[in-house]
Structure formats: C-alpha cells, structure tokens
Amino acid sequence: MLTFMSSIIQKIEALKGPAERALEGLRTVHLDGGERFELFNAGVKDDVVHFGLFPRDLLTTALMLREPTLLEETIRFCTHTIGEDRDPVTGEEPGRVLHEWNRVERNGLLSHYNAAETSQLLLIAADVLDRLRPEVGGSALRERRNEIESAGDYVLSHIRDGLFLEDPSNCGASRYFAMVTYWKDSHIPGGCEPDYPVAYTLVQAQTVAALRSLARLTTSLDLKWRPEELEGLAGKLAGSIWSRLWDRKLDYPLIALDRKKPVAGVSSDPLHMLAYLEPGDIPLDRLAAIESAAVRLETEYGYRSYAPNQVDYAPDAYHFGAIWPYEQALIAEGARRFGREDLFRKSVRILSALERLGFPEIVVFDGRKLCAGGCDVQLWTCAVPAAFARLVRGCAGLTGRDGARLGAP
Image (tube, rainbow, N blue to C red; front, top):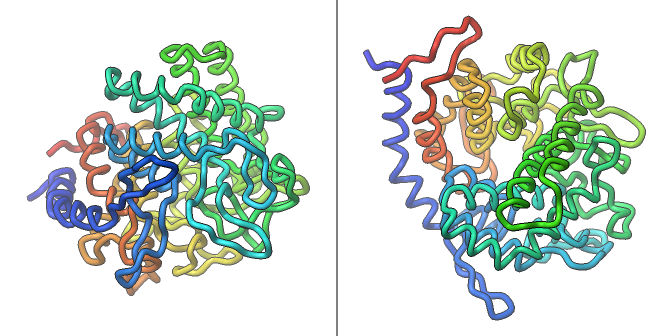
C-alpha cells in the first residue's frame, strides 16, 4: 500500500506537466519606460486575460517556487514601479509597491497602490533571492538598493506601538479604492470596510518576516539600519499578535483591529501566517488553540478561507468560504516550519481537487459538489504542485499532536 507521502509525490508528478503548461499560458512581455519585463498575468477567464500584472501574485508565486529568475524579474518590476509620491487617488506612497498595473476605477479612485503588504513581500523576496543565488542576487539587488531602502522606510513608517497600521491618510485620502487592502480584499465581515487605521493580523506576521529580511539585507547591501534593532522590532511585532490581536472569546487571532473595534472570526489567516513566523514567535498554547479552531475550516480539499456558521459565510463566497489553492501551499509551509503534521496533511488535500479541476482561482465545495470558481487559470494556483514538491523534500521533521513523525515514502 502506498504511504501518505508517496501518494502525494504521485499526485505532484501527475500535476507537474499540466501546471507548467498552464503557467506558460499566463506568460506575458510588459514594456514600460524603455524597460522590458518577462512576467505572468494573474488570471485568465474564458481564454481572456481577466487579471493582469499584480505584484502580490507575482511575488507570492516566486516565493512559492523559490525560482531565482522569476524572483529577480519580479523584483525588478516592483522596484521599477515602486511608489515615489503621495496620491490620494491611487493610494501611492513613497516605498509602497504596486498592487495592480492596469487602470481600474471606481468612485473616482484607482486601484494601483491598494496593497498593504506588497512592500513586505518585496523585502522577503529580495532576501530569498540573495540567499538562493548570492552571486546573482547581490549584483541585481545592489542596482535597486535605493528602492529597497524606500520599501523599508515604507514598512517602518507604518509601525506604531508594535502594530503595522494601514491608513489612507498616509497618502492624503480618507479611503481606498479597495475596501480591504490585504489579499482578502473584498470586505471585512459584515460587508463593510474598516474604520482606519487598521491592523490586519496576517499583515502583522508578514511585517515580522519583512523586518527580519530587511535586517539581513541591511548587512548584505550595507543599508542604513542596524540589523539588531530591526530584529528586536520584529520580535515586538510578533508579540503584539498574542497580546493585542488575540480574540479571547474565540481563543483565536483577530482578522483585524481597527480604530473602533476588533474584527473577529475564524478565518484561514492564522494558518496562513505561520508561513511568515518562526518557532519561538508563538506561545505553544496559542499554537494549539489555532490548530484546534482550524478544525472548523477543514474540508476534503483543504482549508476554507472562512468557517461556516459565521456572518457572510457561503461555500462559494470569494473570501468567506471558498478554498484558495495557493493558500494551502502557504499553510503547508507553516505546518512544515512548526512541525505540524495535521495541518500539512489537510492542506495537501488540495492536490486532489486540482487533479479534477485544473488550476482555477478558487475551489468551491459545499460538502457534496466540487467545482471551480473565479478565473479558469490563476497564476499562484499553477505554482501549487511545485510548491508542494519543494515542501515534501523537507517533511522528515513533521510530527503530529502525539509527537509521532510523519511517515516517509
């Protein structure tokens, strides 16, 4: 009988070729200001590009794949388009990495710089490139040293009393085009937008990782900060997750904390954020509480974005019930980092859905019927098989709650 791990490897091998072909279908050449970039559109629906160039998607995909060429090209594009001014229409700020290249307008606002965490992802990606290929990374990153420092300034300027705060007043506005500016950008529970300033818990964890990356980049690129101070600040932000962003009633992290109220709910964010934290960042009782509550998110095909029996939940709701394939790979990344077999085993179930559906943006499962949703082909979904292939190579240390090691093939 096949072991668990060998069956996963078999699924990955079956998906590898189709995923690579789907990824090629998203490849595009982008020209801007005399620069040529070889990148990937974010999504295709009905054979038409539905989502164009999104740095969040590009950076996340490059990090999932740990592919140096894609990392370098994406970093080059992000630093080429990084914010320089303050613009209340687009959300631009100095050092803020682009959200979306295409012009999308609503109520007089544009979506261009409507992402709270893309600068953090840029710093993490630059650090990963520097460590993967120092001879390439160092040269490429030194050419973009000023923009990397600008991204660092952006991140640091948003930290107040141990929290990374998103606030449109930083660009001279009262609100953004997007109701929410982290990746779940539809709205917060209740169909509304936050009362700014707001701290998103997942972005807090991404900021912890970005500060640690900035500390390493400060050493390798001779940036203006003191690495030990950045490391200390990262530890302070990690601590704030448990002291200020924890919902004692649910015994689970908040989705967000805005000016007036905590935004509570059992979502996939705390599982996702494990990919950006390190052992020692999380008290063991809090890790156990997250894992226990995550049972409410489980399905036969991975973890839902939001648990049933909560306001706004529906199995096909974009950010409030659907299963996001790419997020399963990030959950598995965190599971491997923290040695949690249960989380890994359940996140890897997404491969069974991809065998049946291809590489869609979201997976919809109502307990009986499985179907695809959103874009027919989504960039970061195409990266899922290769991301799991990388992860299974490092799974020897995974353990279950009883301490037993995950079986090897």
